[in-house]
Amino acid sequence: MPIDHKHPISGASYSAVELAEDNAAVLMLDQRRLPTEEIYERLRSSSEVARGIRDMVVRGAPAIGVAAAYGVVLAARQAKSLDELGALALEIRSARPTAVNLMWAVDRMLSAAQAFGRVDVAMLAAEARTLHRDDVAANRKLGALGAERVPDGATILTHCNAGALATGGYGSALGVIRAAVGAGKRVRVLADETRPYLQGLRLTAWELHQDGIPVEILTDGMAGWFFAQNAIDLSVVGADRIARNGDVANKIGTYSVACLSRAHERPFYVAAPWSTVDVDCATGESIPIEERSPTEITHFGGRRIAPEGVGARNPAFDVTPARLVNAIFTERGVIDPVNESSVTRLAGGA
Ligand code: MRU
Image (tube, rainbow, N blue to C red; front, side):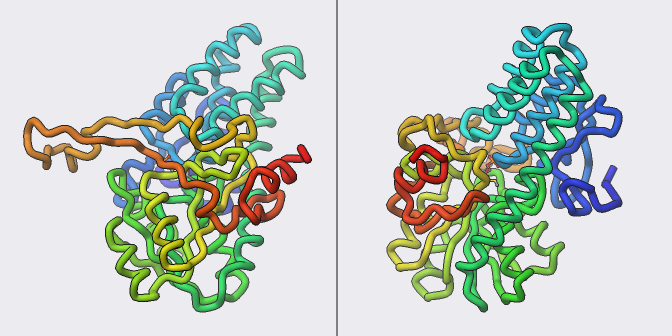
């Protein structure tokens, strides 16, 4: 059932994920069905939340983190001890490998439970709602910082969906665009369709169109041609994990956008809350890249479109080296230049 009021935490009429008022269920907007159907799944156990993350009912690094935090609340309803809570949380923590927000959120919830000294559903629900609110506030802050780099009249390329649907609300890359529009700048957006899951075509286009922000869809192979015609002023994308040296893992195809941006001397920006930065990961080489089923490529709408007997490769993410990233917008400040000393300085380590 659609949420027909402004959601108090996401600030929009929709919310990727929320906790039911009685703390007994997690509501996930089924992003596999957007934009044709706006349906919320009601999940009643931590295993169901893990399944919702694995099957991409909810997706996008910060939204996965919020869902995981709410999943730990459901685990707390089932667990009789902190050990049992930790065991149930492990299933959520391992639902997808690349977005570090997932591990970060579960660990924050378990630390809160440890600090409290017992399994307390109400306390964990309050902690999870705070984590959700913090994510929206972070997106608004980093969006405003990023918007300063957006010229009036810019045409902006984005890849995948790093919007309200991919976060607790407002969005990271789309947060930059929303903040630029809020500051009175006229912008146009080109959204890569983002094969094979079509997050750009289905989700980014849906979100921006609802906000009245001009958006057109490109197939993934078109961006080079638009750069060649000087039709793109800058690119901004989200991130699933940022390594200590500034390498960025994001949706497959992001690296191509970064290479094109550099070849055509246009800025390539990344927008992400600090929960996406993994200072324990020295470089992009140690970021685990999720491999998804080849059927996402070989099949379309449940029907095989590739020749029988031919396989497909399906890495869900790639890594863009720090040297191709002009700046990273976070709520702690702008990482520019993008290198290890800038990241560790913002991390508080130098
Ligand atoms: O596979 P997905 O849809 O979860 O991948 C999402 C992305 O790659 C996003 O760009 C990233 O998580 C940032 S979302 C603010």
